[in-house]
Image (cartoon, rainbow, N blue to C red):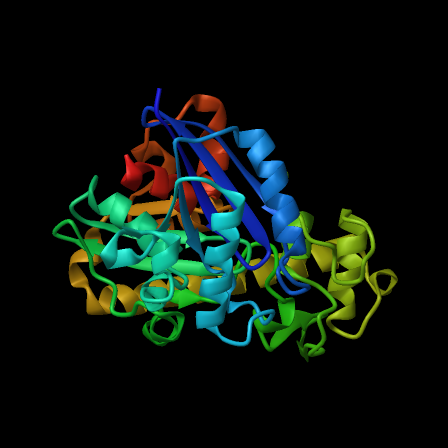
Length: 338
């Protein structure tokens, strides 16, 4: 039996996927915020190695180099590459168009390694679908990537290029600040400006609406208080300079619904921008991934596009399908490595 383990090192999560003879049998994510250094990431690796077991090959991608722990993205790539060489054996790092490279080659390939996890997913899809539109809504960001003629047709590659092309949108199901989702919101029949403080996140919005999948909100809340619907309503009310007791629950629930709608519209806008440049993808099936697959399905429905989940393209044991969809880049690496 050949075992390949895929790893995706993000700014706040480590994701790991275990494949045995090409079949994915396990996937999980671990809290590992890099802002305070790499110590928590090393702890996450230790836990993940216990959960995933040994592998004949370890394949790695990352976005964590963008964390402000590092003075530059190049430094981040080099330090994270060194860390995985220390943590794992038989390591290959994904460098996009250059494929897999050894950790010792990270310095030479750092621009291709940096934030290439989206490319791993798109490349894996391109081997299975001639035409598609890949959309991944994660905890912090959303990827929108067109695929045509079996090729990844993105206009951008780096984060900066992808932001400019609308292929990277900084909105996610958990960590996005509510104040970054919209500048104002309707309350009691009036448009109310938001307070530009991190009083609430989109995790609060989706918790109130019941659209937050279990086990995906691993970070502390904005105020350090509990993860409950009443506490989320209180945090959301504070965004408008109010308190939860100043209105009934229906008022705050409607407000949460409005913010969720604003998030959907921002993603739909990005999709329309992307497909306006790649018209082939305008009629292509959407491949949905990330913890926000429900949001992707809603966007696809509004645009009249069919939608299937990323995990459906891979050989996955039934009990791991949801977690594989949540850890799509790490799963894609195991498929590419096989």
